[in-house]
Amino acid sequence: MNPILEHLTGLHTLTDDVIAMDFLMNAKSGVRNYAMAVTECATPEVREILMKQLGEAINSHEKITDYMMQRGLYHPYHIQEQIQLDLKNIQTAMNIPS
Image (cartoon, rainbow, N blue to C red):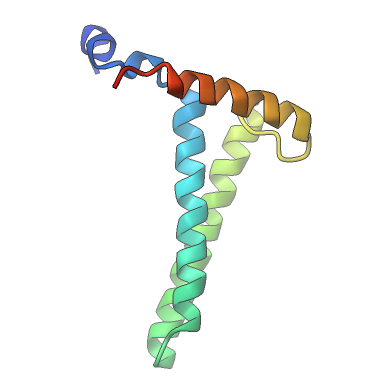
């Protein structure tokens, strides 16, 4: 997006870490939804398709997690570092104009 438009719309404050965390949360939601759908299947054929989709969703989640960890955007094994990063992301989100 054009830097002027980003500034006018408030999107200039959306940093890579905020966008990546949103992507990770959506991936987690997808995994959870596919897992629940598998338990509700009426036919083996549908279950097989959903299991394949679940596997792909898990792989996507892993890739996003690895990406974020490599760039220091996610600290799943260091809770204090993650809390500080989350607080920073919250502050960034709160500063986006409505």
